[in-house]
Image (cartoon, rainbow over all chains, first blue to last red; front, side, top):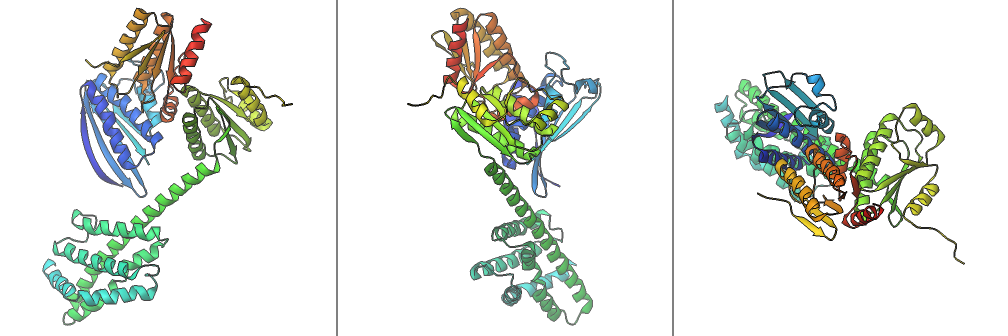
Length: 134
Length: 283
Length: 120
């Protein structure tokens, strides 16, 4: 598996969430992703980028286009130096709420992608990595 | 090592015409050039040789993944792709490269006849390089073929389950055969798109021709029904046979108020009624 | 500040969302619509999302809230033009927009609104 290209995009203000969505859409199109898969990915990006901004106090979105034999993939990592998630199990249960959220952010996003990794600890920030393949 | 390779390089450059001729002959003799136009073959061989020479001149080693070899990799990828489209198998495409070994070894044997140790070393270097390029070609070839197969599979899926317009505003999707996850998804997506394209308010999914329904398929069906409703249309499932009804109950699936009918005819009757239409005899 | 335009058509209000909305814009729309419903005593609101190729949980929630708000103000809300990819994604997200009526396009949406209003 090789990394075809990569980059990063800041997420600090509301407009950045929109820009992150548009960037993800552009990258997914470049990978040749089908419309439905692309839509799911962009929606997941919207959820996670918003989390990074609202709960993480701002952060970055790193992206990589991966080549693995016949398939191409898009991997995105959302990282912040915010408060971190104290109870991961609870956060990954549908219906959990923190702040004003519906609590669908993480669990919903997980269902929309093929690979989902969460690294977090109180006071240590949060890293969410998602991947979708063509 | 690099200094020695310069003389190999020079030998290759000086004897290009002869190398190309021997190589092309070898390819034609082995049948690897079948279905190829003569001028295409000639252009491909001369371009490949030039790229190797210029790549080596720039001091690139044997790591063909390195950026210095970008041009030749691109050339090989295009070659593989075009060969795959011609229906050639990977053996023929790899032969293209390996067939160059013969003429090259002969050339080097001649050139280094007074220095057997150096000859052995240079032969090895050349062989390693061509092997690496050959492997890259095979890998790329496989990628192209897999992409073609994938696309064909998708097209087949769409063809095998056509969406039928039963009436203005009523679409039917007759599903036949065992349903797997992927097939169900592709088929459902095309149904949703047809609903939007035709503005049909009712979609009838007929599963008469489906022998068994497992949890995954049932979940997909339900997800599709939910999506149809979200979009503003409605769905009727017809052809629910007793066995399938039992499975649904056993699995504890909640049909969420989706209307089911035993057969397509009943479903159509219901759909027409919902649209405010009646069928009457003409006399 | 940019706003999404709200058209008045008789007793109904029509909103066509054609931009990639950031959160604040969505909230502004929610506020603007509630205000307009009140001011015009509108009986129905038609939200056209046929140009939206993505609807996430924030926007979904906004639409749900709007539908609830309108009902309290005696107006019906109908959401029209949802794209298939969006519908599939919302289902996967688990967002089924309960209490929100939907229709395939503006035409059928209008018909539905008129029926609903007549029923009231």
